[in-house]
Image 1: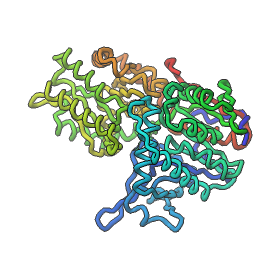
Image 2 (image 1 turned 180 degrees about the horizontal axis):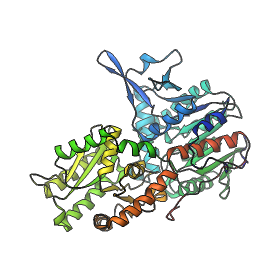
Image 3 (image 1 turned 90 degrees about the vertical axis):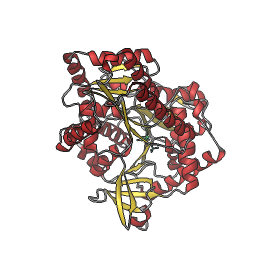
Image 4 (image 1 turned 180 degrees about the vertical axis):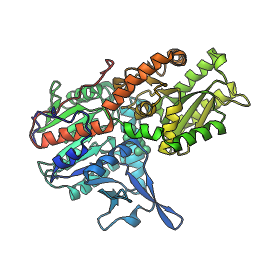
Amino acid sequence: MSNNTTGTDDADPDGTQSTDWADAIGSGGLVVVSNRQPYSHTYDGDDIAVEVQAGGLTAGLDPVMQSVGGTWVAWGDGDADREVVDGNDCVPAPPDDPGYTLRRVWLDDEEVDDYYYGFSNQVLWPICHSALTNVTEWERYWEQYQSVNERFVDAVEAHTEPGDIVWFQDYHFALAPAIARERVADDTVLMQFWHIPWPSWDTFRGCPHGEAILEGLLGNDLLVFHVPRYRENFLHCVEAALDDAEVDHEAGTVTYDGYETQVTEFPMGVQVDEIAQRAATDEAEEFWADFTEKYNVADTVAVGVDRLDYSKGIPERLRALEQFWERNPEWRGQLTYVEKGSETRSQIPAYQAIQQRIEDAVERVNDRFGTDDWTPVLSFEEYISKEALASLYRHSDLALISPIRDGMNLVAQEYVAAQIDEDGVLILSDQAGAGRMLDAALMVKPQNTGAFTDAIEEALSMRDAEKRARMQRLREQVAENDLATWTGLNLRAAMALRDGEGSVREPELPTGGQP
Ligand code: F6P
């Protein structure tokens, strides 16, 4: 299909009229495709329990699907998932108040090892985070990545009608769009949101099967990144790798194999109002009272919330904290750093190594400075409720978000959304996509330990008026770019392409000058 159209200029600027999307998608439906499913079913003794996935992608798209309806295709990874599906592997979702269909795709152990732990997380993830030394490839990873992409397209095909919008999510499905393009009607819109960074050509040229990855993605009508520099990197990679591709940087289009793909950026946001409401609940207050008492938390608190991934810069953050307590002995006993981690991808050696490094660093700092009644770094991995998390953000005087490379970093936005008292300071790595949106944060390079330590000192000595002014600006920025806005931008762009209305609009962002 062609996508020479104009368009979403008349979009609802705050993106809140979600029913528009459902109406405008009209008779055509929405089919979302992601690796993780929003709900899984697990055995709990003889009963079957429902687990809600906490990840940013699934948590963000579930409300969209609930308001729009349609089908969500995802890996059925719960041990009781097969018990509850119908003959077509479908189950209504959410289970207690169905609004859409969840279509499960089954993966066997080999597929999980080679497609998920293998090509997705030991090739594409490290390449896109510019961590070339963590790339490990086996031929079987690539074979399973191809075949799992085909199997997801089988499911898409079974649920897609002409005029539908198929929305692929993330790096697990780089091949699926080109496969689907051969199988679905011409007026079906294929689009993809790439949730992680896209690297420069000099890094991407190290990607095994990189050309096929680019060709797969060019099966999309619309390919969306978080920020302009990832889009530009992608366009340069296409230009360098595919001789026959025509790239128009100005229009953000690629024509390849007789087909045009629009490439743009819409920064993902969070559910700002819901997070603020949760931060103000009684449950949130109770959590904080219990937590501070149980762990004898100091009066001043810094927080970090991360999957325990090598891209998140956690050892670097702990080094800056260590240097801070070394330089400022008067702050010993006065500041507690809370690290809420989540175990992730621990089957992969690079993850085992980083998780061990983090554990060692926490132990080192606590051994060095801890006393009988003060633990400098409180690190825990247990699940806490959304209210408890909002409370942790609200009551933390500073947030330390220090990824070495990160597509967006929704934690930074969640911290700001929960800052209803407007008295916290955000210290943010300039390597996260969120830096483009959140220009009133104190920006750091996570590996510059001296400057990172300076930033912690600056945050802790900042005058109240400056803190408030910065936090108010950050709060405006996350509210303007919230999840509903992002959804509206994506779906309106897709509808503009489907309905032949012109090229998609790029959002005007508040920016501190980062591309
Ligand atoms: O950041 C990319 C991402 O896919 C997120 O969207 C998601 O929250 C996270 O990684 C989870 O990773 P996994 O599904 O491997 O646990």
